[in-house]
Length: 138
Image 1 (cartoon, rainbow, N blue to C red):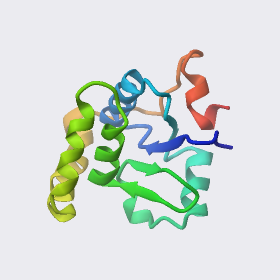
Image 2: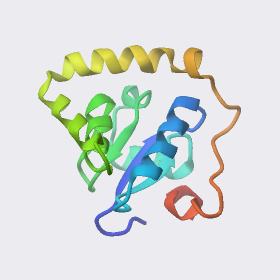
Image 3: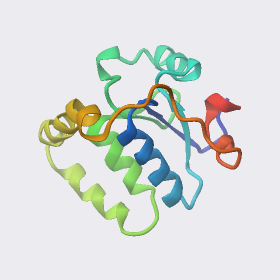
Image 4: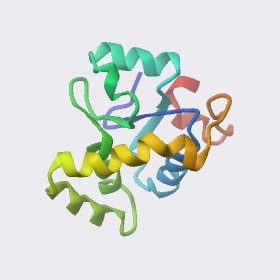
C-alpha cells in the first residue's frame, strides 16, 4: 500500500485549514516524503483501525511513519515541518517545548478551525497531477 520510506499524513478532508496545510506541505515536500489520505476516506479509517489509534485523536492531523509509530497534534505538525524544504525545519525546535503546552495551542486552533477557516461539503479531489500523492485515490 505504501512505498518504502514514505510517511502518511491523515487530515480532515472537509476542513479548509487542513486542505490548505496539505497543499502547503505538497509544495514544500521537495524530497517526496509524504503521501496523503483524508481521515474520512476508507483508507484513512482503515489505517486508524489497523494502528488502534484512539478515535479522540481524530480531530487532529496524524502522521504515520511506520507500521507502529504515529504522531498527532503539534508533534505531527512539527515533525512534518522538519521534513520540508526552506526554513520550515527550524520549527522543529518547538519540539523542545512540553507537549501539553504545544497541544494546548494546537487545540485552540483545532477547536475553531471551521469557524475561522470554513468547512467544505466534501473532501478535496486532487488534480490528476497530484492524485499519485493521495493513497486513497490510487
